[in-house]
Image (cartoon, rainbow, N blue to C red; front, side, top):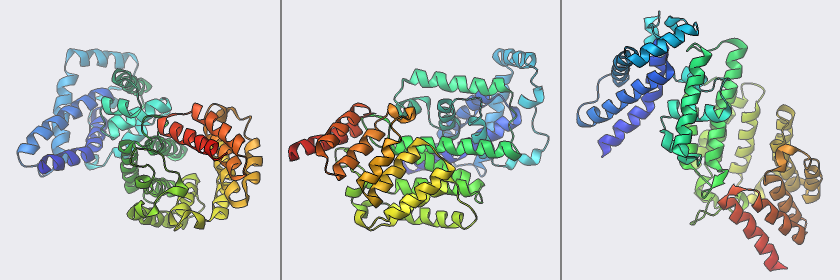
Length: 415
C-alpha cells in the first residue's frame, strides 16, 4: 500500500511536466494528453510491481511519445492533420520535435499553465482545463467539485482543448506585456480554485479540501518557478494564511463557525509561519500588489491571539490600500465590514448604503449578511433578523443557509 502511494504521489508531481514536454515536442494538446494518460497508467501498474526507473520523467516522456506517434499515424490522426493543414497551422507546431533538443529536460509546467489559461477560454473552461491537465484530476473529480454531471464537465474540457487547438497558439512562454497579462490570468484561476475550495458557493459542504489543497500545490509549483515575483509569492502566502484556519472553520456536523468564535489553537501554525515568512520577503521587494495586500490582511487576523486583539484599524487601512488598486464591490464590502469593527456599526452601515445599487452584489447574499451583522452590532435586532433571513434565501451553500437562519432564529429567541 505504501509503495502504491509513493508511485501515485510521484506520478501526480510528474504528470504536468510530462504533458508539457510532449505538447512542446508534438503539439496536439488533446491527443498528447491521451498519450500521457496511457503512459501514467502503464507506470502505475509497472512501477508498483517493479523498480521505479532511474529517470521516471524520461521514462514517461518516452512512453507517451511512442504512444502519441501511434495515435498520429492512425486514420483519426491523418484526418486531424488534414484539418490542421486546411487551417494553415504549420506542421512543425504540432508534429516536429523541438529544434533545441537541450530543452527536453526543462520543466514545462508553467508554460502548460499559461496554455490552459489562454484568453480564448472562459474562466470556467480555464479552471476545468487547469485542474485536468496540470492538476491531474479526472473529469469525474472536477465534476463532483463543481456539482455538475460528469458528462457536462467532460464536454467542457473537450471544448476547451479544441479551442486551444483552433487558436493555433504555439506552446511557448509569452514575453513582455503579454507574459504579465497571462501570468495574472494564471494567478486568478488558481485563486478561484482555492476560494471555491475554501468557501464553497453551493452544495452541502462549506469546505472542499481537495480543491483548496490542489490550488496550494499548483501555487507552490508556480512559486518554485518564479520565486522573485511578488504577486506569485503573495498568492501562495494568502492561500497558506487562509487555509491555516480550515481546521477550526467547521464544527463536528460541518456547521460554519465564524472567525470570532473559532478555536485558534486548532489553526495550522506551520502554515501561518510559512505564509508570514513568504509575505515578509515579498513586501521587502517593492510596492505590494493585491494578493500581497490580501495576504497581509490574513496575516493580521492569524497573528492575533484572540478575536478581541485583532488590529481592525490596520485591517481597515489595508483594505483602503487594496481599494486604490482593485476597486471592486467585494473589496468595498470587506472594507465596510472592517470599518464597522474599527469605528462602529453605524460607520459600516453608511458605507454599505453606497453599495446597494451595485448590481454585482444585488443577487448574492453577502451584502445582506454584512448588513445583518452590523445591525445586530447596533442593537437593531428585528431588522438584523430580517436581513439574516433574506440573506439565507440568496445563498446556495447549505452550511451558509443554516448559519444565517440560525443567527435569525437566535435573535428571535432573545426578543
